[in-house]
Length: 78
Image (cartoon, rainbow, N blue to C red; front, top):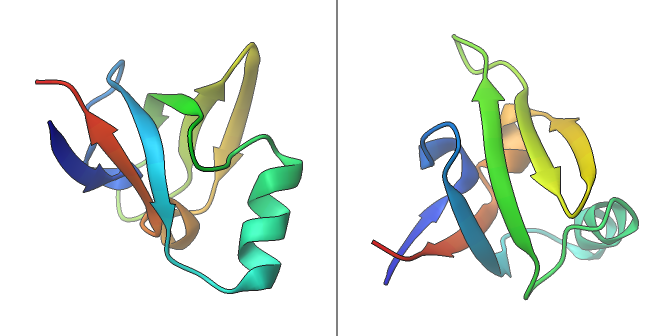
């Protein structure tokens, strides 16, 4: 098992959220979107030059900023 942040995932790759680097406001905001420790997320695409990252959480597709995606740590099966 390998850990990395969401920006490091390849398109189509999935991982389980194991840690969120951020304060209470950020973790609450992500939780409202369905992103919390233990949830599996799939990276759909990312834009060039640190643009938004599109992900799928359950049956929902979301776009989150690069800085926020960089702070979501996931564990990936190799």
